[in-house]
Amino acid sequence: NGCTFTQPFASVARALTVETRPGMCNAGFLRDDALLAVLWISDGDDGSASVAHPELFDPDAPLGPPATRAALHPELLEPIDTFVTAIRGTKPADEWYKVVLGMIVGVPTGIPPCDGEGDRLDVCLDRPEMRAAIDPSNPTRLMHSCLSADARAAPPRRFVELAQAFGPEATVASICGSDWLDAVRGITDRLAERFLSLCLPRELPVDDGTCSPECTVVETL
Image (cartoon, rainbow, N blue to C red; front, side, top):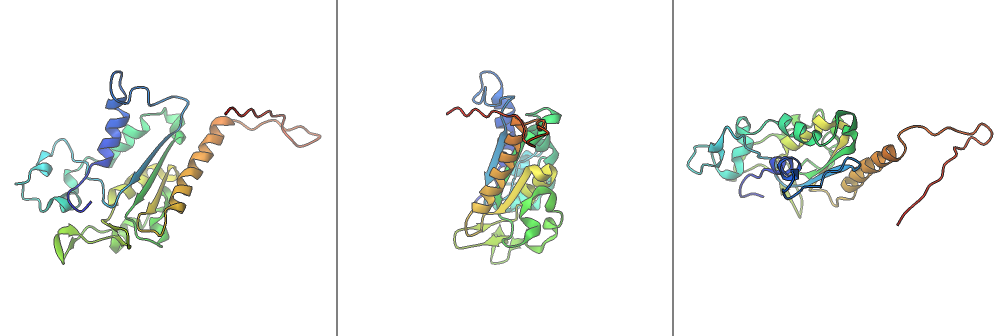
């Protein structure tokens, strides 16, 4: 947001763990028979600080301007694995396919290595646009990774790292795109695939004579 760093990963992790306990705000939100979709829309990166490093919040700490601190001091942030564990912990290991992540963030536009499913982003972090660097024209902010008439974004390195950890269960798109249709379609396509796997967990037997399965579909509105 250009003013300070935010903690979207920590917020989601808390919402799905601490706040889902009995008596807490999100009690009952997680259901065994439901898919879980998490969508982030951000023009910055995750700055979820490690509890061992509260100095990231200290205005007097010699860590630079607030908007650049998290990017230039990644050693003070909570490891990505912490959030992978928290999000996947909402489902048993054999049902991790029920978790889908969507990220509309500041990856460069029109560059395939930075746009798509998490297992296709291998070289994204190596691109010069994705490196965290101080803007020489304004040392209180980072150089942008993408720019459009409606958005100026900082390099979302940790978003890409989280997407890589989730592979095909995560979809990344650029917030600087002309529209977000492809991004939303990528997310809904993943959800549709999981719905099918939930409804039809095995292949239906096919009649030898008609090559069609015996199947009755009941739709309840």
